[in-house]
Length: 615
Image (cartoon, rainbow, N blue to C red; front, top):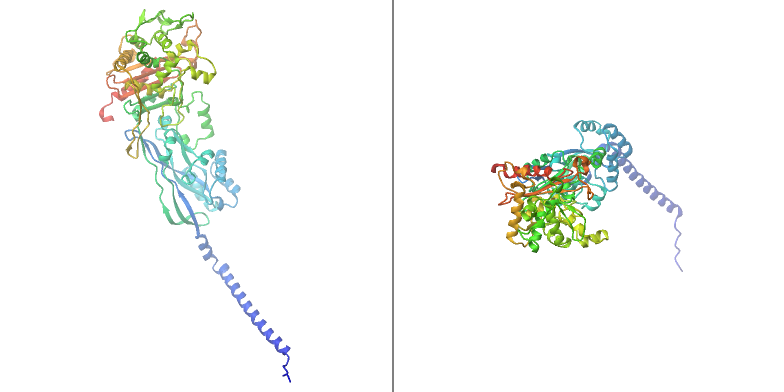
């Protein structure tokens, strides 16, 4: 018989369950009480302690912009420096009401519409917690005012940064260029990492061409900051690599002499060392103060420069393209001698005009309006250069043809950029039948060859090209790439030898002697500047027309508007026997070479007559 097993006691089970539930509730309530007490302790009793610890636990990676390399002239004169400038910036993440903060700042310090526009653009492409600049060049009074109100301007910072300064203002503005604020297009092209914390970049000239060397490499540091962005301590630091210092071939004294010699005239001077290609002076007038751009140019100041009829922002030395006029006649003479079309004894009849075979049109010589006749019944090479006889070179041009002229003159660097280490250089024009067909869709006419033969018509050259061509003449055929850069961080840079033009040494001697006669003969076109000259030079004058003159009309300068008058040009190298400098000068609307040659004389005197101690 099976054993009887009693049923479970319900009352006992209920009691056990109730006891267990009570214990669980008590445990939960105890734990909840502990949590509440701890929460109270953290939020009330220890609030200030943990709030401070929390604020100290903000870590940021901050960029350290590099110091921009300095620029010196050949003798160590400082041309581009760095000076501290205070910048007003905003850290967006620490500003709760951006519009309100901007309004408060505008009430404290002047903030232009352009400043606000630049700020909004940079705000869109910033990194988190990266200060965005709002105002540059804060004055001492403005900094003090912001410091007093700092407690009610969270997220607003005032920091010092080195900004470019040009101690000589407009004197070297066109030669070395300038830096300016990074714009939207540049920000997309630049290396974002290496330009973090940098607000300026080289815009034109040497500053732009050697930007990679001058800029350096950005550093960084990890820092702890409080809620207001103030650095509490530096956790890690990697110093930036400063940009390399650059020394140029430019000579301060020579540059100043050329600038002062040009005075109020619109023009340019380029001086080159023919042995190295180093650019000793590069001046374009009128100039402008490069510091206006480095510090952030105002709209009003920029409008004045941009809209001026004298175009101060236009670098005439490398951008100005002018008919070279008679300055190409020594090169034409070398082409005639080298091609065998003429010798030093070949003569051309000169009644004061020239006529193409089978054509009744007369192409006048400039001397005709002065003497009523030509230079002489028959003119040979030396007289043709010394007295600048157009008739001789009309005949030579016809015999060479325009394509023959193109072939010979390109060896002097005409018709193409010289390769100067700067920006915005223009190539000029060395015409040919192919050039006119491609550029204008028209054939070449014989009369155009005659105009090109005396440097008029379609032919155009920059002052830099003329200086390079003069250096080729001085070195008897060696064409070097002109260079502003002399050394980087003390390491000398050698400009390359581009080409050596093959020519008979006797031909060089004949042309040099003719160029010497321009100043040192009784009938030379620049004989006036030779008075009291203690050295000898080889040179050539030039005049280029700005407006056309009718066949039977006479050019009377006083009756022509000032900006329609002829340009004056002059090229020279010196000393005659052993050249150490080649110079090209242009005076816009100067009326002729008589305006340019005195400028060249002052430049040559400055370089050749200085004492050895002057460098």
